[in-house]
Length: 78
Image (tube, rainbow, N blue to C red):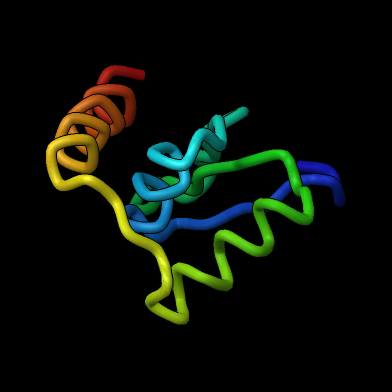
């Protein structure tokens, strides 16, 4: 991972970022007990992450659930 990437293992944050259009560029499976989701670092991403933790984001529940299913499939298929 280079310094221009953002890495998180928080599944709800990863799903929310996907819902907001931020694409996962890689999955880090170095730790066998944890998957890290890697995104390209940007000011927009930093703002979305901050808003997530400040409880300022809203996501359509159906979009969240379908994105969650897709991400789980990706995590368990690789």
